[in-house]
Image (cartoon, rainbow, N blue to C red; front, side, top):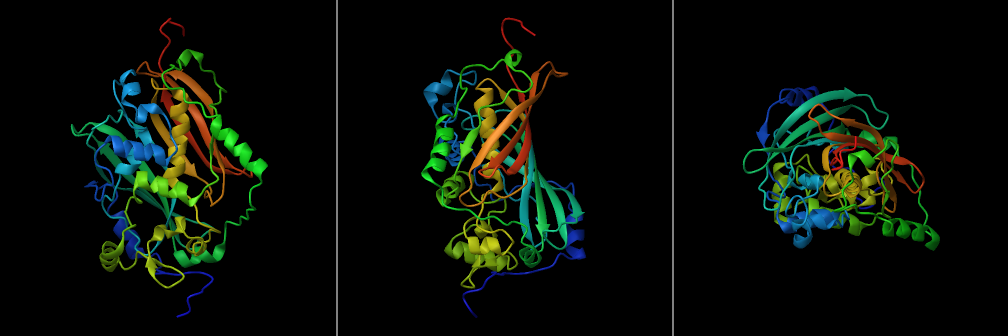
Amino acid sequence: MAASVEVIRGTERKITDEMVSQVQAEIGKEYPSKDQYNTEATLDNIRHWANGIGDLNPLWHDHDYAKSTSYGGIIAPPTFLYSCSGRAGLQGFPGIHTMHLGDDWIFYRPIRLGMKITVTGGVHSLTEKKTSFAGRAYLQTHFRHFRNENQQLLATMYLNQMRTERNTASRTKRYQSQIEPYTEEQLEAVWKGIEAETVRGNVPRYWQDVQVGDEPPPLAKGPLTMSDVVAFKMGWGSHFVHHIRANEHRYWYVKRHPDLPIRNRLNVPDCPEAVHMLSDTAKAIGVPRWYDYGPQREGWFGHLVTNWMGDDGQMMELRVALRKPNLEGDVQWIKGKVTTKQIDAQGRHVVGLDLWSENQNKVVTATGTATVCLPSSPDGRR
């Protein structure tokens, strides 16, 4: 078999009615999660996640600093829970490619240092979609419940994925993107953005001081390199199905799941996550070069919000929709704007934000919203 092929194909199955029926039968069922990457919020695990998304807030790693906060110790970024997820119930559609569309999070409690975390979940919904990117396609939403050792609910996540037939997607070529080497002037603009990052930290952001239309200082992320992806993987682990395995571990896993791999340019079965590392493999699904993991950008959205709200703020909800991939070499500017401000039925001082990321070409690649509870000013202002 020739080693050089324009489009690398692995197992190319079609979505069948039987596959659909199997997944539909699982809707609403709840199972314990398997293959959790992190099962405990240790100092190292929290630090690895924060480092993987570039979050320098000392609340996540500095004991002395964290002791002085209202938490009395280190906590994890809310999005740390991505690293605790795993398989839960039937994943469905063997041999069918998955595109991560984004997630919806509801947070209930802070994640404290030393907390043990268990996860349950399953299939939430399945909806057929018509798309120009592929042939037959389904929007599949999974749910995950995260609990501590006392079985208190920490958060719920709804994970949204598009299931598309691999070879059909590769022929459509939806994403056309060329990139030229950066000039020193262009890079300097990014470096200035990075150096301008503001961490609110232990200075309270009072609800009374926030106005609709306020904009958090943006975050500059990129240009995206493989070292960024590797650092993120060190904090996150693998995808929620944990496909990345090495040597004998990979061999026996692929033997049990023969529809899983995508074959690389040497005809060697590789994990589907190779689209995030190898441009040849990414091209096989219609993307011009390797690209980021969805939770990486979603972690950046959370980073923007926690920077802005300060240590005394609480993230209640985070919802992110991934519109376009963040390709090798792309810069993402993570931005936001306050859109709502209210005192809710529980008396909490709540602020809503719109969030988005735009690349170096001013193309919006992801959108989202966040709901934050802020402290109320002690002087009684309304």
